[in-house]
Amino acid sequence: MNASEAERRTRDLLERDASSVWHPFTQHAVWPDDDPLVIDRAEGMRVFDTQGRSYLDGNSSLWVNVHGHRVPEIDQAIRDQLERLGHTTFLGSTHETGIELAEMLVARTPQRLTRAFFSSDGASSVEAAIKMAFQSAAQRGQHRPLYLHIAEGYHGDTLGAVSVGGIEQFHATYRPLLLATVMADSPGILREGQTRAERAAEVLQQMRELLERDGQRICGIVIEPLVQAAAGMLTHDASFVMGVRQLCDEFDTLMIVDEVATGLGRTGSMWAVDRAGVEPDLLTLGKGITGGYLPLSAVMASESVYESFLGAPTSGRTFFHGHSYTANPLCCAAAIANLHLMDQRNTVAHAAHIGEVIAEELAVLHGDDRVVEVRRIGTMTGIEVAPVDGVDRTGFAVCQHMRTLGVLTRPLSDVVVLMPPLAMSDDDVRTMTAAAIESIRAVVR
Ligand code: PMP
View 1 (cartoon, helix red, strand yellow):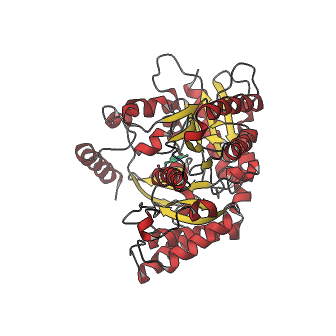
View 2: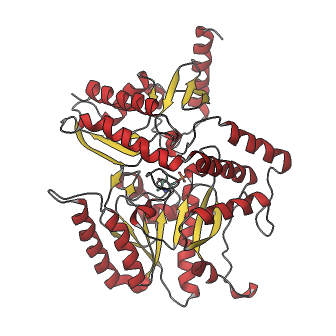
View 3: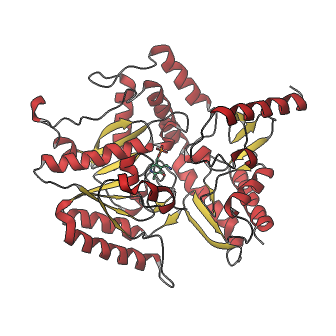
C-alpha cells in the first residue's frame, strides 16, 4: 500500500468510526479533531498505525502489556488452547486450564489467599470482592452494609466499583445511584510540608475515628495499595497499607486490596502489598494477568472468607455471582503462558530495574518549574505538569507532542503517565523518558 492509499484508508476508517463507534472515556465532541490514531498492528514494544508509523508503547496499552506485543509463547499458548477448547462454562463444570491458572495464582499471591474466583475485567473483580465481603459478614451473623474506602480511589466503572471510588470528575455524576459508603481522605494528597509517613498516620487516625463510629456496620476496607493510579499516580507510604491491616484486624473487617493496576510486577514487586509486608483478605487482580492479550481478572480470597460460604444448597450461602465467560480457557491459557514467562525471565526484577532507569532519567526534571511533581513506584510513573495558560488540556498536549516523537501514552488530566511494558529494554525506556522530557519542555513554558 502506498502513502496515499494508506492515507485514504485511514480517513475512511476514521469516518466510519465517527459514524458508528462510541469510545470509552472519550469526549466525542472533540475526538475527531484530536487526530486519533488508527492502530493496525503491533510487534514487541511498538505499535504501528495505518500509515505505517511506529510508536513505542509507553503506557503498556493502558497498563496491561507485560512482555510486549505478539509474544511467540503467548500467541502459541492461545493457538494450542484453540485446538482443544475455546470456551465452556465454569458454572458447575471445570477445565484443566482454569484449574492450572488458579493453582499458579494461589502459589504467587500472599499465603493467606488460597482461592481464585475468576472474573473478566478489573471492575468486575471489584464487584465480586465487595459482594463477597458483605455476604461473608452476613453469613457470620453480622449486618455490615457499608464499605470504608479512600478519596481519589478508582476501582472501575460498574456501580459497585464506582461506589468505592473517589474521583470527583469520574464519579460525582453517579452519586445518587451509589451504595452507602464511608470515605476517608487520600493518603496520597499531602498538606503543605507534610511527609508521606505523616500523611499516612493522619489518614489512619481519621479511619480509626470512622471505624469507632461505624465499624460494626463496615464489612471491608477497600484500598489501592501504594499507588492510587487513576487519580494521577498518587503514591503513599507503605505504613498506610500496614495501618489498614491493623485496623481491619482490630475492627474485625476485611482488608480488600485492589491490585488490578499495581499487581503482577508494576511496582517492582509481584504485589504492592508485598512491599508493605501485608497479607490482605481479598485481593483483586486483572490487567497484566494475560500479558495484555485478553480480558481476565480474579479475586483471590482467604480460606476463612471461602469457608464462610460453605453450607447446604438450601442455606443461601452460595456465592450467586458469575459470568457467561468466567474463566474463559483462551484467557486462562494466555495467563498461564504469561506467568511462565514472568518466572523464566525474572520479569518482576527487570521491572524494578527499569523503574530505577526511569528515576535516573527523570531526575533532570527535579526543580524544573514546568513540573509540579514526579511520582513513581516501580514502573508506575506520573509526571504532574504545571497547567499552561491558554492550553485547556496541558497533559494531553504533552502526550500529543510525545506522539510526534514516536512514543504513545495517555495522560490523567495534567499527569503524564509513563508505564512501560515490564519487559521494556533500558534503551527503549530512555527513548520514552527522553520524549517525555522534550515534550514537557516544548509544551509547558
Ligand atoms: N482497579 C484499578 C486499581 C484500576 O486501575 C482499574 C483500571 N484502570 C480498574 C480497577 C478497572 O479495571 P478494568 O478497566 O479492567 O475494568
